[in-house]
Image (cartoon, rainbow, N blue to C red; front, side):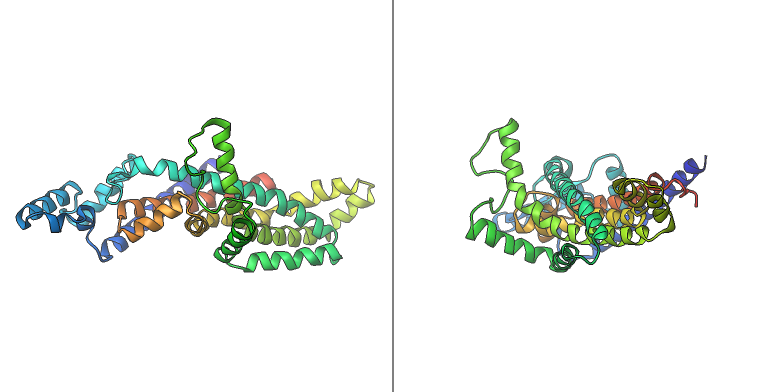
Length: 330
């Protein structure tokens, strides 16, 4: 009963915050300079007669609903968005929903691959460095994680391109497919994964550095606890003490930083996608901002808002899975 009540309260909170942020975002983008209709019509202003252009301009403005007062525009936009109609792209001359599916799939696939790499490396590495605290291996890893965590992603991306795509042409430099390749099935998937290796490596560097340090710090604190000494005194195997008793109790702070890292990862992929020319949500967002394509921009922004709000709830639920003593209603 307590969990149901908590989830209901969190759902109401998410809906409330979602609408507040949507109002702010809508107001900000409507106050930005630039005429979406003129951008959409392009060079028609110079090729058409003034009267014909004015009529076409007004017709397009009415079709996009831009002739209505701002409150009516907002409610129309929000009502359409809640029913799956994300508006019309002035840049691509298509409905937003028709152009968003492929970039979203690319972004989700890229981020999932980066998350898998980060977790597979950082969690074991954090545990090993905690167990071997102050040893040579621990000190080397600490230096490497600090360097990886401190250098901005775009710097790592440029260095990686220079080393692994220019100096030593091992990986493709951009895109998700080899030019002129139309193969599908396993061959197409393999080609796409090969193009994702370098971007995933770049996206994983800061995550590995940050999460490794959090796992290490949490494990060191837990390994000092009395119940760990008691478990060892009972003759339990060291692996059982570390992976069953210590690691599970060290997961609470790790869950917190991991959740926020995952949320930030989707936002951070904007830079990586732009550097590697990957046709994902990030590149689409940058292009839409440059072209004043506000329907696409607002859709992207609301996606990140929902991701952040849902992440908070998932983080609370993860607490209860990691430690049954944590109650959601508290």
